[in-house]
Image (tube, rainbow over all chains, first blue to last red; front, top):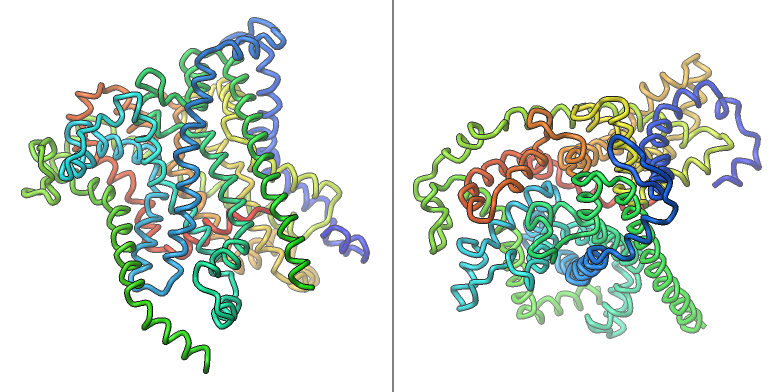
Length: 309
Length: 289
């Protein structure tokens, strides 16, 4: 992009400094103050002991030491990964399968798309409240339906063994439509004649799926996986409304722990430390996802090269 | 010709397969709609219908009692007013603050441009919770705690909105700018009189995204509002849930469903009316840079 412009003479109007400042400054001041500066400040704060009104003092990595000895911290990590394990595979795989289904020429698929995508436009508070009601141990609809086939009643959100599962079910209902929509757009970009040519060559539906469709939506899968991982790490509203982190800390999430330490107990230095750890974990996980997809890319290119010859 | 014949044959061959697909489609649609239906249905039920042991799909005597109680027992009007204020202001300010840099980033050349683009991208990728504590301290330092302004202003810094517009502005030909400049117009005028009217699709996608994100925003407003009069809908509703134990929360579900209907109506209506725009907003914001 940049090289094209530098080769030719840049017209004067492209460099009008006054206009530039007027157009650029307002937004970038906000971006700097509310998004960029805070990231550095957050790292800086994590080296201090501070509360709302005063900073007690520089403590170096003391907050980190405390955090690594904090049993709640490990609980939070375990809970968050448990949540990711429940939500991640379902959201990605079924998001894709839903898109496949809705990409076929079935009557009423627009209605189905509307139904699956609609929860995504609701606020998290509504999601939490509704699912707390649906999963209610005594009068919840889910238990009533399960009761008809002789299951339960299950105290979904009030016992440790199922609370996170309940939260995950609500989250899947909320977000799977997003993944479906993203996949649907990718599927619609696949050239039709490619699939038709494969049919003529005698490829069955499964063969087409694995040899054409899945490889062609790989970039989308990368995007969907990475956003699912990142959003799972940042899960908050669901547990805030549905369980409050309980029972017995079994659904306490990363961001919720940050919220409690920072905005209930006002240990701002310590909460910043939790924020830094969240950032680092997301960074590492994103890097892992990136590497996984990079590798496959290389092997696919190799395979492709051979196939072309 | 061969192709269509082949496809037609296939269609007839797979009627059984199609039947299964239709069954799956219907089951999924019902399952996805069920919670939404349940919100609506519960909100019109009488107390004893909510707490029965058999399923009451449609209330026998639909009542507005829950809606009435919601308005009586909680400052729902104030929460709605705050939510509307926050959303309208966020949309207005975002429109101005995102459109201007988008023009400069799309059409002008300057040394810092690549750096600014990278910074914008970084702010999209980095978790928003990381900025919460520092911005919280800033808000306190300028004495704006517990005000609508403290909810609104930090929201007007979403780089994704600018990116969406940059992409569209790039596709508008330079000749248009050059001709207007020759006619004596300034960039300011060109932007608002030519670019914005031409960019209806991109601007509306940006506004829809901003609208939904602002209306539904929970984490940040939860931090900076604490008196009932300054809360937005999502925050206000969450306080009801937080202040009840399991047993007494049950008593509130009718009222809470009524509130959920009210809180969801704006985004649901916009979604149903502009579904394709919505889909576009989601898919185009997922493609970065």
